[in-house]
Length: 341
Image 1: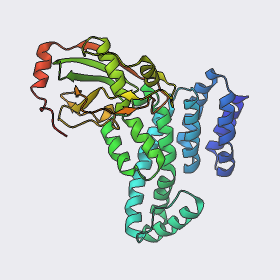
Image 2: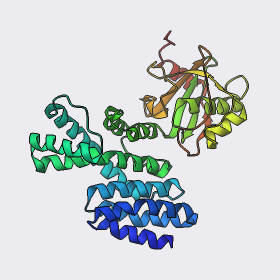
Image 3: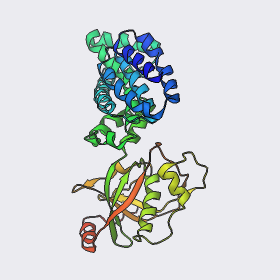
Image 4: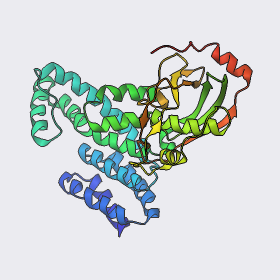
């Protein structure tokens, strides 16, 4: 039954009847909630090429969010990732071009909401400024980019999808200026902070260091606790390990836990001396000589937060290699002394 519904939706996405295709989205997602887990990944793989070839842009973008919902329910993104990232990149470029034209032609009017009334008014503004042929793709990009962003976030729950990002800094540079243009862009910014790689971690008070593998961590609130657990557990940092209930919540949930507050363990800086705020994430740590270098000092004041993940994905922080003293000393020779900020 679910496979039949997926096939029907596939055909609708490839057609030009936008109304019928859009009306089929909610029933598809509802059916997916009742489907057997093993049915979800084939469904995503079947829909991906149709989404890439859909002749109606808004149908393609909306279908992508539906396929993303199947991924969030347990399907693997597979070929959907490539389709979504390609279309997202184009939509982001178009969104920036839309903003350039809007700011020049709209006479100070606020940005349009993505509803029928506002988009009709925006069509009149852009068509008058640049003509229908140029305005049409810009309007579609403004309307559709949040859908592609949400689909991308669903794919980026998976490490194999994150590996396809390529130049993560370039993605961030595209998305960050749009953070106030739609909530979906904020979600995407957070997802782009997740890395699956080794950090070179230096603990300044003890003069010790390690190569630490980090995966699935979205912000430094999460990183702090899991890093403290890994380093104290490996005997690299003195003190007690964090409450294991906190550690479990940051690794695999439950999210929205009512556990008591988590303690601040370190003051974080990167190799340039820049303070790493807890609201930032692993991808914000500067790369030096091919490694993200994180420097840990004693926490400067007491801060607390509740444990919980930004995204419902498993997180991992593990010590893979303890650095030799010579390695630590060499790195510390390049690290600025702690600042007073």
